Image (cartoon, one colour):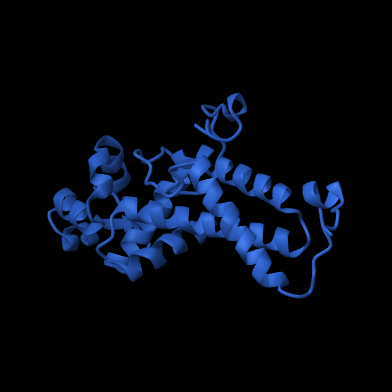
Length: 211
């Protein structure tokens, strides 16, 4: 005899069972993320443009300078983000090679760091700095891909928390997919903090038309 399930437990919430609770939540979270990757493609694909965001550009410059020059000052002669904006193909070139082509050498770039700045929101700079420290040969697109993976991991943690607290699979799946849709909307700011974009019109098609 098949036990009937309350429709509310299918759509909204269900009482979390103690046996295998965490394993089931992890499986559902993984399944939701996989579905989201299909419905919202390109979540971890590097964005083709370096957005004109002042804080993001300063954080990127400081992260690069701190790793290659051990300084948080900015250059008064060379602007790496300006090069990345003018030549998007340079996003896929190792950052050190971009510095060499711009300043002639890393030492030449380091000697130009004469402008002291104070970054009162340095979390993005520290995140970029950590990424470049792990892989000094990384490109700017590689930084963007890594930051996108971090954001996707945060969504996966949210999904796991929802399922472990008793949210139904349907509700958790919808929340996970919509969260990934928001990430897709924010793709122009992949290299920096999340900002809203007036160019996105996701209401035209809730899942697959996320910009």
